[in-house]
Length: 193
Image (cartoon, rainbow, N blue to C red; front, side, top):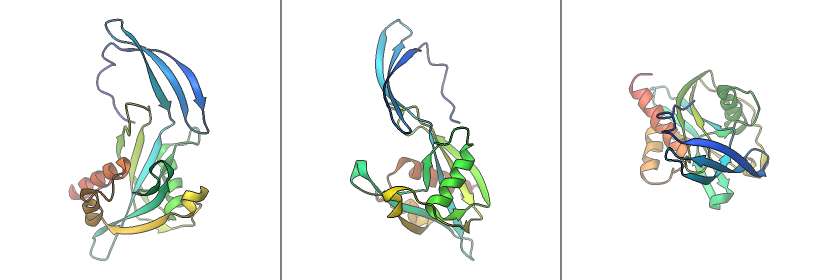
């Protein structure tokens, strides 16, 4: 779980008023008070969080490739290249188990090894969501269990890790969890991890 700097710097959360309860997310208007007594409100999307997985496979020479997905994302009205990922929508399910489930559902892979890479705050100005990102290695094929029309039409991409990093530089990969996950995985490999 992500660590937060300081202790809130004197700010106090006074409470939430529910605006909308969806299948996974809840939208609230939250009341706060600053250290000098100023009261203010913020719209917040309450989220159970998410998990992303960087699945690496290695060729005979030991060069790493990553398995990515290209999936239609309605908010952007186009396909986005991402690591396999999903919401932590099963109450009490550990983050690593969510990652394993999403990896099998979306990429058709079972990880022999899973290692936590990093937790990111994808949009701290609007949501309390935390995305835990894992590195998956020793992957073997499994059956897909894709959910919904977007996943049914997603495309799997096997990309050398160095090429995936270059895709970030060219703006072809812009998804926050994917950028963070690829950089973290590359760094871990360079450290010999």
